[in-house]
Length: 537
Image (cartoon, rainbow, N blue to C red):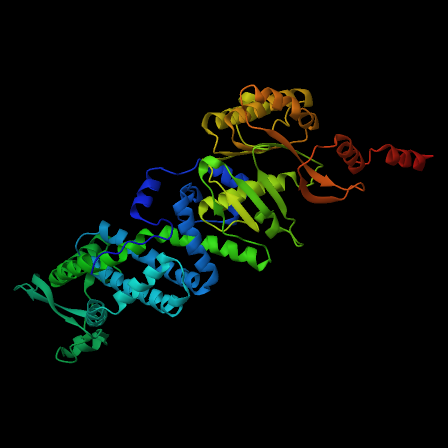
């Protein structure tokens, strides 16, 4: 039977090799994954989430087809959940076998591997065959057909029969008969294994047998234990006896080990390698689909993204939301429409505290990250050009703040982004430069915005610096001199009574309303101060 190539994440060997060679892999660090909250949404044990990001449109489309199938046909994910621990056991057995010498242990490991292989095939066959006609993705259909081909092959049937016979042969071994020749002084002269038995020996009344000197009774009745296994023997004596017995058993099974390993190498290895190789992919797929199912159960929309060329830098979302927040709150999640375009490649986002600035900033990054993992997007509609990198600059307690100070640490991290990102990147800054005064922060922030304008990357700068938003027209005039990308403003909407809608509007900010909101929040509006004073009179 020809070897079978299968992947849940890559449409071809060429695509997989390109990904391993770091081609079409966006710059998305573990820090970015954590700051967006994605590491809490998809928790992997055997691999890193960063390994799976891609900017290859064909790879993304391939994955969304598979994940769509898994969402529509729950039996696929349930089957993968069942088979994953079996594959993990096979992998562990191979590791143990590679570390062992050719002994009886290796024989038994090989036997166990065959049992696990057959178990894996049966799990996949029983889980996938009934839903074969409901699947649409080419990859899962080909997996179904291959498992069917294996399970119906003559060789597989013969393997089952051989396994049954060999299992009975090995598992029925209950004891061995050891023969020892004695010299004239009754000292051991020669010894060895006389037979391998399907019955265990029985412990008889040794004292009575010796007194009667009756050695002709049941051959499976013990008349005296071998002394290396008595309590009075030291560890070296016990080890010597165990090694001697194991050596004898190994000699008996030497031919079987060689023959069985040949069967494993010629058939089982060829037909399980593709499953062992995709173990991390299966785990990732299980976790990703579990997350998407949780979102759907909450009534939240998910959509297949419409992919656009990377050079177009498209990001156009209808009904976008933050999945991390949506799963954490009790009520309904607020959806927003959000787009980057030629008049707003870079945004300065302002608004009241807890008004939704951080939520929409993370939602933008998560939508892109979902897409570049191959997941369905957390939105009602999503047109997207994959990013060459997703970079975050969020408040953090970590970093080299001892030597550089908080501001120095923030600036160092910003410099690292400028050294890496290109015009296809997405950059998300949340309350950056909050460690310094408003005047200094506004000046540095303006320089940063001009820098991202020069690069031309999609950027959100969520900030409390309302004076920065007021300078957008001025900054665009400067950017025009070097044909930089346009800067625009976004505002987290707030009603006159201070109620937060968590809706993000593309409009110019009214700094006074936010200042009033902050004053009211802390009880420092003139009205509230007056009431406080009046209470004292």
